[in-house]
Length: 376
Image 1: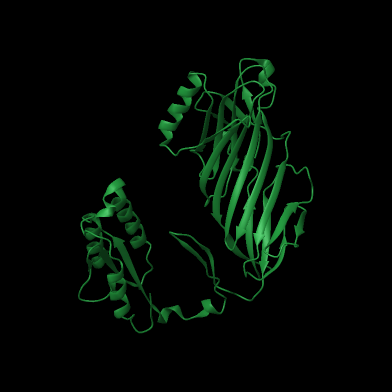
Image 2: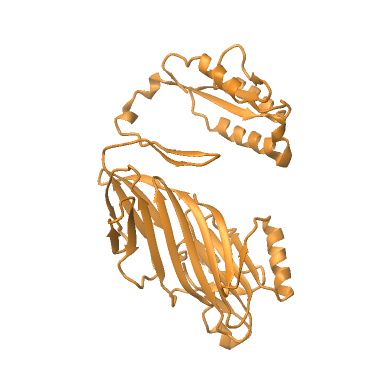
């Protein structure tokens, strides 16, 4: 994370750092998922309102779910998701009216860079920005040892070409990247034990302290109190060869399950295995609003085009009753002819099957056994 310098008509302001004073990262790791909270504190020590603009990176496969601004510990603003141009226009309008405005947007030049704009920050005011995201972690084999790797990106400069040396906020503030910053990073990471048979936790990037006193988790902190933001923070969690498939999280609407196949599991002769894929789609009336059925159809096309060669498939629509694309066989070969039939069905698919009865197609699938040497 690099600080941004504001370019203004006033030489007094242009020679000073835009007021990002503190950055802290708190992470929780459960199995192969990380929940990360980044807190940034902006302080305006100038005699006039300023717009602070700040770029920061996150993992490319991360999903952001929280953006909160707290101003002088007096009130809190929770962000709403809006179409990008609409959000930018509302931000500009708020600045023009002299109100505080806060915008988080993805950089158009990079999928893993985000830009925070804190507009009309009043003199002697403090703004705390809290960003939350989740990401899936990779399983690596480091020195032939299974290792979960967690990375917190902290620098964006190496990813930018010379053509991206400067950016501008929607409010018109010109900014550029600085190679050194006056603030440091605070970092804590909770690693849940959760039957993962953890052998060790280490960091190839920074000296760390590991607190093992808690029976439910390991607490990882950086050994140095003042850690510069000059390289990514990397945490490696080495696992034992004892593998266990676990249910990592249960919610009202979802279950997260962790599968860790061994090398022996992957040595099976896949040429003798016939994979069968069933795409089951809800076509009940409840799918008619907010383009739900349209989104589902686009996702289904993506799945279809991602199927492996030498497999078989079928599409099942369900509502008050259910129907299959192919009725003469449980599944058909994945080839051009059958793919064209599937695309035609998806193109004309609608939310026209009444109620939502998922049990019937699942029973049908159970009654129709997989092919010999088949895997569903």
